[in-house]
Length: 438
Image (cartoon, rainbow, N blue to C red; front, side, top):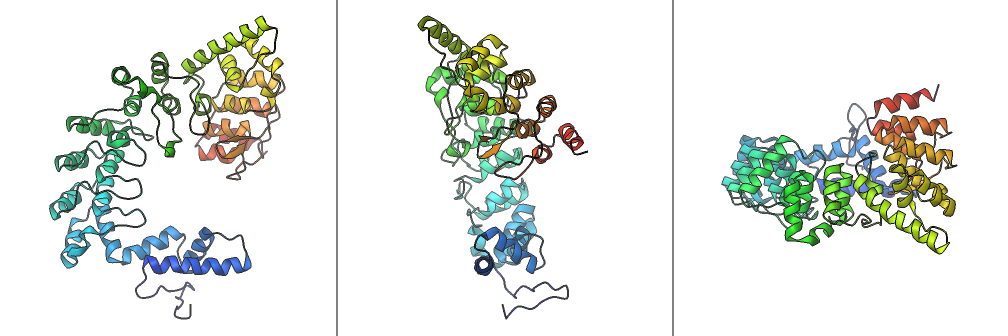
């Protein structure tokens, strides 16, 4: 780095014409230097160290600064900010840049403007000739996907009027435009519903996931009546191939859960990792219809075991269903014949996650370990981690009273229960756990 100089603050000065390729090469070079002293160093370590050398607080801040120095970077910044005057100035001077793509996913300027709801910039770019149906390579989406996801009604209408494909099949999440408007967290407000109205008016139609997301019972019935296999449709690998029923549980829609079970959805259906509805539930009643269906199967197994004078073949789902529905006699029988249900399989963890304090206390009274580790998604956690994250204060209190250790850290994030409660914004639980440190 002999060609680099330091500023008065001691930070290295950037070269006269830095660009992102130069920056990435510098990061790889810095990684080689770090690994000479520490073989376990990661690229993120090198990026952070490089950013600090140049006086920035993060790699993202350094990258954004360098990006803004290039013509391409200035164009995308103007598109994101809706600065039509700047766009016009830059494109008049560099007309070939109209079709520039932003790395790494190759967004067009229209994607950037649409995602940020910049209607004037969208109008300008369309008038300049940008393709309304150009796809980017990250999620294989059109600009209208991103405008719909953000709830920008006027932009969605303008793109649709300009010939935008309001269906948008082929995106990486397999949700189509209407799914991007409805299926993400928080996409049930007035703006997103207005987006759906625009899409429908221009020829789009609901699929089962968007209908579930909007709580449209009649539409769900219509879709399933026309195609019963819709109950078995799957989201993409990005959502772990959830079925409509699992999606309804995950998004906390008990009315939709009940309707899907009524229409014939498999209550034992699992996602791509083999997890069922109980893995997704974060409240005691969201999957009640599923548990009632499971309970019927459990009852049949109990009867069969009695007739055959054999032990009951039960699993975690059977136990959770029995306890959640108040059938303690069945739960007693299940754990008597399957003692491992108290120690393995995550029964206590999932009951804590769903906030079922009555069932949690039953498990603790029957010897379940409040400090047992279990793999929840990709992190080994205790029941206390999950209860804290969801803000189930009564469950946290019951676990602590039974000897749960709040200092145990998970295997992925190295966080204790307090950290998980803080991450979830659970103020009451944070106060409770802070009290254990006195």
